Image 1 (tube, rainbow, N blue to C red):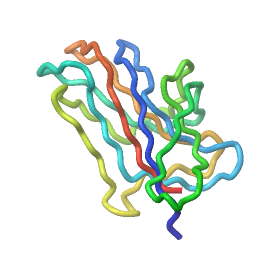
Image 2: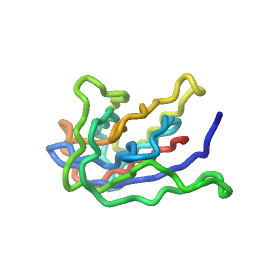
Image 3: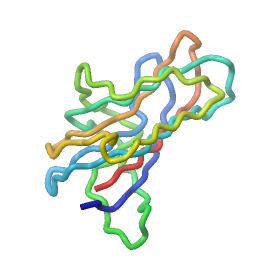
Image 4: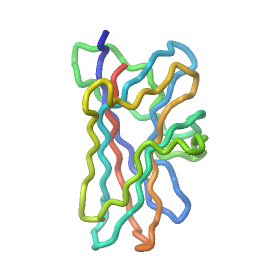
Length: 155
């Protein structure tokens, strides 16, 4: 049965060492399958004609960061259960070989990934701390600025 939908965004400065922009993960209790259906990635500083590598990857521990308040896409919906963090001071534990999306995005572009229906959603399993996170890193063009990632999911 479809649940309620939510959206949240995070921003982060791009560094030579990847630094997570946002993560969405399972809480310690009230576990359920979260379905990610929309991800938007963009650069926020003055753009040049270079590219920035962006990655969305599965994680097994959400790290430490600032709590992000989700936006309910249905105003009659319930509060979300997911743990949403941005501005990480301790990086999430990313799962090896589980990069779900990987794009080199031109600094002048916005990239949006949208699921092609329920079978195309990225599913976060019912496991404590399981989730996904987004990070960008400096490529050969050494972009010095911030990026934003917005994630839409259903609970």
